[in-house]
Each structure stands twice: as structure tokens, then as C-alpha cells.
Amino acid sequence: MSEGSSARRRFVYVASGISALGGLLFGYDTGVISGALLFLKKDLGIQHDAFMQGLVTSAILIGAMIGALVCGSLADRLGRRRLTLLAGVVFGIGAIGAAASPDVAVLVLFRIVLGIGVGLASVIVPMYIAEISPAEVRGRLTSLNQLMITLGILVAYIVDYLLAPYAAWRWMFGLAVIPAAALFVGMYFMPETPRWLVGHGRLDVARQVLGRTRGEERIEEEIEGIQEAERRAREQAGWGELVKAWIRPALIVGLGLAILQQFVGINTIIYYAPTTLTKLGLGDSASILAQVGIGVVNVLFTFVAIRTLDTIGRKRLLLAGSVGMTASLAVLGFLTLAVGIKGGAIGIITIICLAVYIASFAATWGPTVWVMLPEIYPLRVRGPAEGLATWGNWASNFLVSLTFPSMLAGLGQGFSMLLFAGMGVVSFLFVLALVPETRGKTLEEIEEELNVEVDKAG
Ligand code: BGC
Image (cartoon, rainbow, N blue to C red; front, side, top):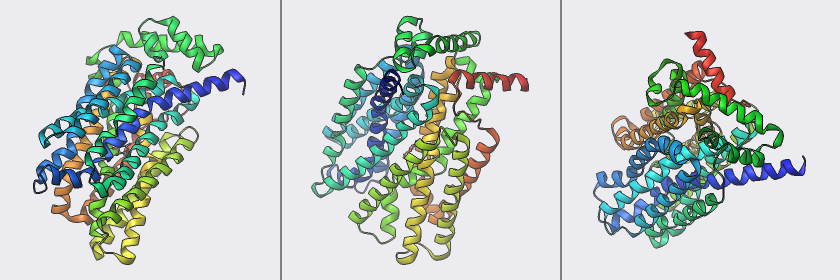
């Protein structure tokens, strides 16, 4: 590799890495509640108020829905870089506010603020990385976002574990101010993406950024590709486009992926694992420790996706993930129905099933959905369309997380698991029938292919 090209590679990695701090905050702020709740409910006097506990937990998801929805048009208006800076500020305010909350109402308010940061980050980070990186490493770099989400969750579990003896829930929330500041400062020195710049007529700056990320010989070719996509988009531009026929295939694929990622039940484990584990007879701190184990599996298997997304491809990974999740959930479900939740040998099988399930998700659906969302939408509607799909992800997360405790009480553990296994089957069929392969193509090529398919259908 020439000196110039390795310097460019390094620059793309640094820019992606800094932007992915937004993913770290996404993971930390959603994961930290599992331990913090144990202590804040006593301090704030809500230990007998299940509704308030649920609200403190899911307020972040309400905020995330808001953030994801406004993010699309803000990303188009302000630019990807400035919106990331804004997300950093929102994360900082949320962290300090949550840590200093005098009562539960203020805490809920700041959890919503944090959620807005999470929602913004969930759209803008994959978009920034997808647009700043060259096609051949795009999958690997966008999945850096998911790696940081899983790292954020793991760090939150570890912080919870370490601070538990001091019941220091305020510190658990407050520490997030450190990555928030790092995101803001780091991003301040990073450039805007070439696609946004070309779209806003700033061709000179776009050329400079492409020079730093792609190499001289590809600059004009990429600029032309973006301009061509822009021209096509102008003929069909606007929010109203989201209901038109030509965009429908991409919209269905994006929303379907985003919603199914939650309907397979991942966050019943990410947010609620200690509850399940205590039922197996583990003590409180052993449960939090086992949850750290789940966090480690979650991080490690994300590397499988990073290595394979650009070689094996997105579609085959998703299919394999659906099979792994369905199988582990089905075994777990039938086992629970047959013998109930117990310790001993059954407990070990349960933990193995949980690990297989988490590994299957982490290596496939976790990263792939965030990698594909910014790939499948045409440039002009990318902001709003990605925002809509991401909103669908948060709304279904909210639905599952809010109803899971009642589902457990009503259906029981066994049938609940089988219900999620059923969703695993749905996710397999959905990918098989509708999801296109996007590995190795430029964003403009993917757009063209989706258009051609519509022309053929029409
Ligand atoms: C999902 C989150 C989930 C996380 C687990 C992400 O891709 O969107 O809802 O908590 O993966 O690692």
C-alpha cells in the first residue's frame, strides 16, 4: 500500500472512530439503567411504584423516537458534522441533568433528553460513516458503530457492577459526560461528508475531503456519481416522495429490518437479563456479573460481523442470524415449558442458549441493520427515510420493553420465548424474500439497482 493510501485509510478510520463515540453513548445510556435502577428506586422513593420504574427505564426510548424523527431533516439542513456536534451537547446536558436530578420527575425529563441524543446518534453516526468511507470498506466501518454500541453497553454493565457497593447511581449516569465531551471535541476537527457537500453545491470542499479519503484518481468519478444521484433525486424530491411507488421497495426493506431487529426480542435480555437470571437462583451480584458475561459475548461476536459483512455479504449473515436466534429461543422456550426455570444442569443449558442467542444477534442482525439503513435509500430522501426506519426501530423497542414484564406475567417465560422464536422465523422469511445484497457497491449503484427494479415492476 502506498504511503498516501495508508494515510487516507487511517484518516477514514479516525473519522469513523470519532463519530462512533455516538454509538458508545447510545449503548452506555441505554444499558446503564439496568444497574442504576436498583439504587435510584430506593433513593427517589419509587421502589413500590412499578409504573414509575418502567417510565424511568423507557423514557430514553421516548426521547430516542423524537431524536430519530427530527434527525433526518436536521441532517440535511445542518449537515452531518454539525448535527453530530449537537448530539454531543445533548448527551452532555442529559448526563449532567440525570446525575443531578432532585426527584424522579426531573430524572424522567433528563432521560428523555438523553434519549434525544441517542435517537440523533442512531441515525447520524451510520450516515456519517457510510458517506465518509469508500465502498470497499463501508460495511466494516459502519459496523464499528455497532461495536461501539455493544462496548457502551458492556462499559455500563461494568460501571454498574463496580459502583454497586456504593449505590452510586448518580455517578453511573454522570460518567457519560466524558465520552460526550470526547465526541464533541473530536468531531470539531473532522470534515463534513462529501455527499452532503456536493448536495449543497460546495464542490471544492467536497473534492478536498474526497482527496483525503479516496485518493486523487477517484475524486471526479465519485463527484459525478453523487451529482448523477442528485439529478435523479431532484426530479422526484421531497417528503411526499416517501409514499410514492419508486421508493416503496427501499422503504419496506428498511422499516422491516429496523422493526424485526427489535421484535426478535434482543432487549428483553439486554435490559432485563438480571431479572431472568435471579429466577435461576443466582444472587443479585452474581446476576450482574453474569450480565457482564452477556455483554462480553455481545462485543466479541460483533467482530464476526466486522470481518464478514464485506466478504460473505449482508443477506447471508442476516439469514444465518435468524436461524441461530430462532433455534436458541425455541430450545429455551420448550425447555422452560417442559421442566420450568431451574438451576443445575437446566440452568447451564439456559445460560448456553442465552449465549448462543446473543452471539447470533451480535454477529448478524445487530450490526447489519445499522449498516444497511444508510445504504438502501436514494440520496434525496436518505435523511427522512432513514429517520423513519430508525424511528420504527425505537418505537418497536419501546413496545417490546414496555410490554415484556406483562408478557412474562401473562404468558409465562416459555411461551414468551416461543413467541420471539416465531418472530425469528418471520425475520428469516422477510430477508429471504425482500432484502437485496448491497456488499461492495457504491451508494449510487445500489440506488440505481433499486430504481431499475421498480422500472421493471412498473
Ligand atoms: C440494537 C439495540 C440493542 C443493541 C444490543 C443494537 O443494534 O439496535 O436495540 O440494545 O444492538 O447490542
